[in-house]
Image 1 (cartoon, rainbow, N blue to C red):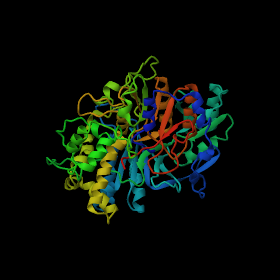
Image 2: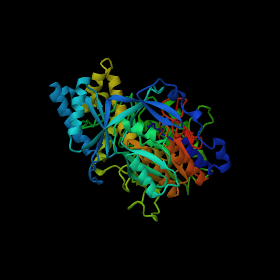
Image 3: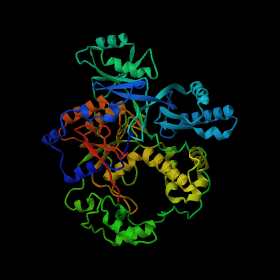
Image 4: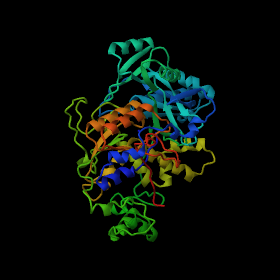
Length: 570
């Protein structure tokens, strides 16, 4: 999907506002093919490590994480009325029992963290002593709903302090020579001890296969060796990259957390939220026009949302010519264009709640003539393979944790989330209470907005069109959004490739990828370049990265893709 996510793909929006698509001639300025020199030098000039990932003749060193493993669950029947986290919750409870029996203390319970990665996978962070890890891993293997335990990798000695976890499943993407017949492909797979899992949709020459003889980290070596096999053009693991940053402090599964009765009238430190507030939120959407909010923040002494909004409203959204403006001047541009009418933007991201009141009228209705995807009408979920990109019905309640991050004061945060508070304190004994509270707030926000609802946020930034005075506006409120879920909260190369092909088949004019990775993938690069060659007016934008680095993430680093950054009001 970070992988690395940018909150706003500003260039997508600006390009729609211009009312133009990049011409074929202009695209040539970006370059016709990927220049391997653009690969981050820090990834190529490393000391020899245990593992290496081959990319365009270069070797990128990878390291196996000792304190984290991944789990592939057995297939489970999930519908929209039940939670896809069922196995993750069961595993969390089973591992909590293990740490209690091993250490004789329930205090160790919180030191095994489970983070669901879509329906089929989960990360298991083993924050325990080395001698306990083997016991926990053995317990994982014994669970009847666990199909396989998988290694978790990181890029060795990356210059980024926000390294991503990379799950290595027994899945390899291969591209065969087009001249091979089906019989010859089957014979080649048998010769290499491989089994066909399935073809990659929209790209006829690509297949997903698995090794019949090895597992774990050896899958990487098999993929590397396949690149030298006659009649195989290229091969690479179907890495699953997570959205979870190594340096972040994730909030554990909120089992039993936040169930205490909330005190009315609680306020967050600084800016407060008044649930009865009914004025339009347009004046405080600083990315549309920063002038009113900037002025009011400098003049309003008691900074409640209500007072700032009232102040901004009185400014009548009059824009200044100040050089300090950091917005995209959207409101001014609305007077001179059609606000995105007739443009379809495919948002390839995490879950997208298209029935949100600000989005439902701007969601693209799919023309399902091909019948490739059963029951599709408003996009497709490539993680759970169904026609609904929204959150399961029984998990919508998780939004209250997002709300709590804003409305609860420090004392209430500590009271409502004691488990998270104690865990962070244990890991950072010298951290102040206010620092711990801020970490919990960030974790709550990241869990909901940054993982589950990142796609909804991005879709809203692009094309929200409110039905009442409490909604927000997108930069092009008359454009249509095509929801495509590629990750939640992690994406595989195959999911992303198929999401790209699907978006083009459904007629998207623009594809927005508010995601990225430090690890390049040749198949994603080839898919993007192939789609752009076949569709000269197509625009693809991707997030440059959120780590304040001069090096672009992929796919933003691909010359034909428009790399997008973000800004704030400072």
